[in-house]
Amino acid sequence: MSIIVHKNEPIDEALKRLHGEAIRENIFEVLNEKRYFIKPTEKRSVHKRKWMKRKKRHRRAKRRSKK
Figure 1 (spheres, rainbow, N blue to C red):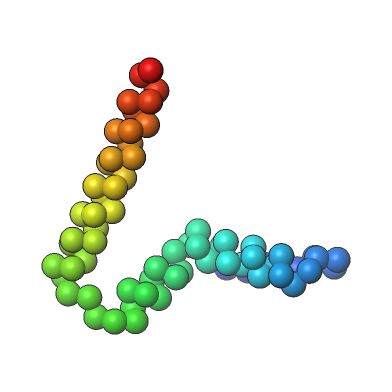
Figure 2 (spheres, rainbow, N blue to C red):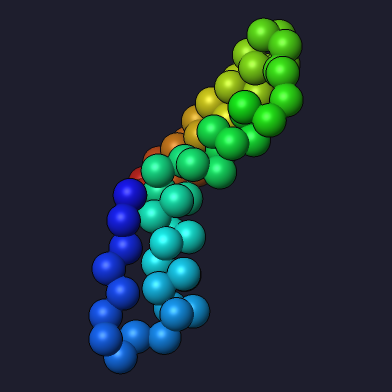
């Protein structure tokens, strides 16, 4: 991951782009996972919650498109 800072670009904007890149590559998520040991049952429940949220959002979008 790298960010090129342009000549007249403020540092704040470059940091904002770097933050966006880190989010897109899930770096913060990986850091949080590595920080503490997470039991396998907790991992499964978190994964299932994310899956349910995604499915619910998909259903809602499908319902809206039918109208």
